[in-house]
Image 1 (cartoon, rainbow, N blue to C red):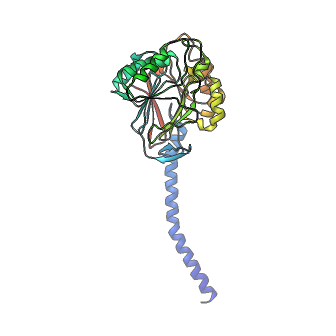
Image 2 (cartoon, rainbow, N blue to C red):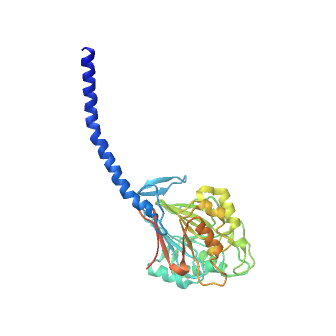
Image 3 (cartoon, one colour):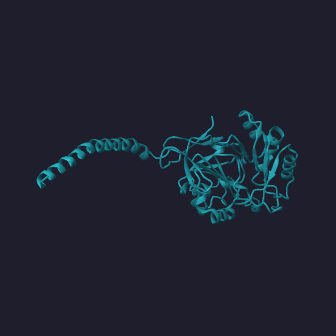
Length: 338
């Protein structure tokens, strides 16, 4: 074959490849244009109040090493129960297990909520710390439901006997195990969820001086990060700045969570700038009711708004439900219950 014939043959082969590739490239360009036109209005609109954008559609789950892995949609519901001036969060986990973190200041509201949902047993009950606006409602819980596991700090509120009454009920509960979680421990609450202990004081047996007093007690609150389905919620109890500093120092970016249950009902001493910078919450829920303490404070709300968190309050919004939303543009949704 002479050089001219070889050149013509090569050109014909190249033209054949080009004729095959051009339609595919055009189709890809049209697909990208179509995707971009769909994506642009969604991104320009920004996330709805309380929604969290994710890099791509789909659900993710946090693995034990803290990384995220693509997963199927999961059943993970968090309820911030309106119990007045106090704290109570009820959680349904992907494994089918359920959790109650604190019970509020009385049994009436938490009892009504649990009865309405048909809850007769609770796998895990957590008393974050022995202050009455967190433990009094647990008396109703032990009297009317079957509790399988109780998590406590061992702190003794020396100004009250009410916290000891809850511990007596837990000890008397058939087949109920009491646990004293330690910082850094991962709790086994079934498959599909990661539960990390961020703060606790399991070795301290006495602290505080009054029924509702004592920053020491607040700073020993059992604090948890629960993650499932690409959706994470941080529960710091009544932790104040001292405990927040310790959590930031130990866990750093691992504190990052979609939703923050705001510490100490939005007090001035909680939600410190360094803590919020580590957590980077897209949504913040303040559990609060009518009170004479000036809670939540403008200082705390201002700091939350400074990190662009959408702020909800149970005294205004009522009981709130948070859950992963998947598949779709957003990984989670926070809304008031009807």
